[in-house]
Length: 310
Image 1 (cartoon, helix red, strand yellow):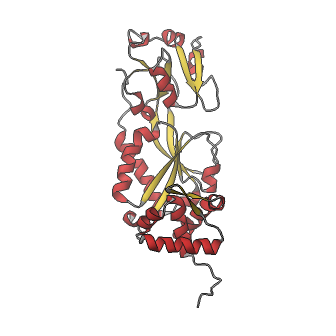
Image 2 (cartoon, rainbow, N blue to C red):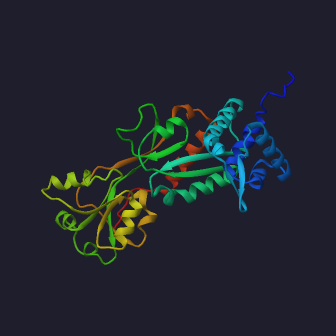
């Protein structure tokens, strides 16, 4: 079939996706292994086809127009769908994969597992880019609409029932204080622990949780001095104050450097950190490869939960 002049050139769609992702003609050319002049010609065709400049110069950089910002995510999803349709059944060669994956994680995950994951992905699939997105809420909307490819976290009531879940590791809460803190010396009893000033971690701003319930069973109540939204913030405050931060052990390993850590003197429930994704990506070979990378990196980094004291 002879293509009419009015028919869209779908090759331009992939070019547009890379241009909007890179924000640079030279970088997009390198990624698609084209010459800068060929990429400039492609951008000119896109501008003519769409009736919009798409990327305009601001100083030495190119910035997207409002129209480009409006369609960026839609273009990314369309290109991914086309790649999925055209990909041959069978094995995946990660070395030939050119794709950006968006991962939504709790703070601490990137610090602990990010370097090893980036090294693994870079060695196996140099054309893959990982985009880490902070986990502000547990809303499942971004997984449903495709703006997020993969998520790590604890399954809760707000997790959409259709999502796929696979456990990564079990974790327990421990306490962390600055070196020289009174709790860094002597026996740590429930009474001493509860009497100290505490930092509570809650994205919703709650001042109570499972640790408080365990203390309440002993007739004790901890003094919550401040509430923060993440474990990294809690540990930073503990490092610079006399407050206690109670955090998951494995999830915050690197963040606790230089702090005195000890097991909680009460029994608090363990948590399970899981991989979470939408079922439409379940059989996607590239997504399956990424999930295996995350699983294996976490398994390699984590031994048995040990005594954190010291």
